[in-house]
Image (cartoon, rainbow, N blue to C red):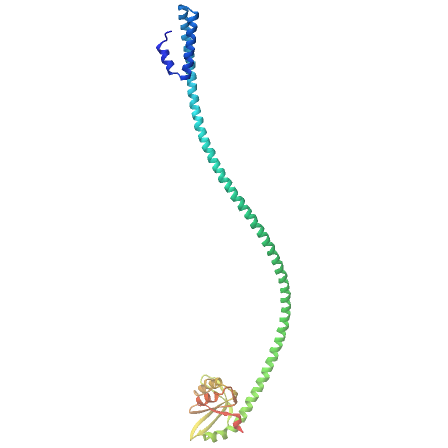
Length: 301
């Protein structure tokens, strides 16, 4: 049966499967035509077939378009599936990282709990030590209270000792003053003979205790004071009495008395010191080095 060129072209465009189905359908139609219809009938049948074919073809075109859209949709679904799989893979990796992080946090939590437990134990030990310290503090306060009472007693005893010490010093001062006066009184008697014997000094007046006033108005106490003659020269005897003589006493005698009275006394000064004993063996040499005459109380015998 002859078919239009348009129909043949459209058949060639079909999908191989659809084309095979369509060709089989045409063969069936052709076979039926040969068996049952006349020429006129065949023409009519052919016309109807053409019309049916057009309808079928339009249906096939719709099916083809639907197939194309389905394939596009499938392609989109495949691409979406791939993206989904990639996303799932990312989620899997993220989950692994999350799991790892959770494990780390869990381990950190365990360590933290262990540390907290250690701190709790340490706190218990600290509380125990604080309690012991508190008890020790109470005992210490009791001891301090006892010490304070003892201190009060000690201070009272010390106050009494100070009073006694002052009295002792007063008595010793009086005794020292008495001893000093006794040494001076003995010197007044013995020195005129010793000075004449040792230095050919003759006294013009008795030796005595007295004062010399400096230009600034200061009164200088002199233990032994008198005037005499030495080889025809007028001299002033300035003497000091010390129960126990030290080099410091010698320096004080020079600085506090001799140097000051030199501002008042015109003429020659004859310095001397009288003592019972010296504090060091070189004091005697030191005194003579300073050109001061030294007499001991035992020289008065």
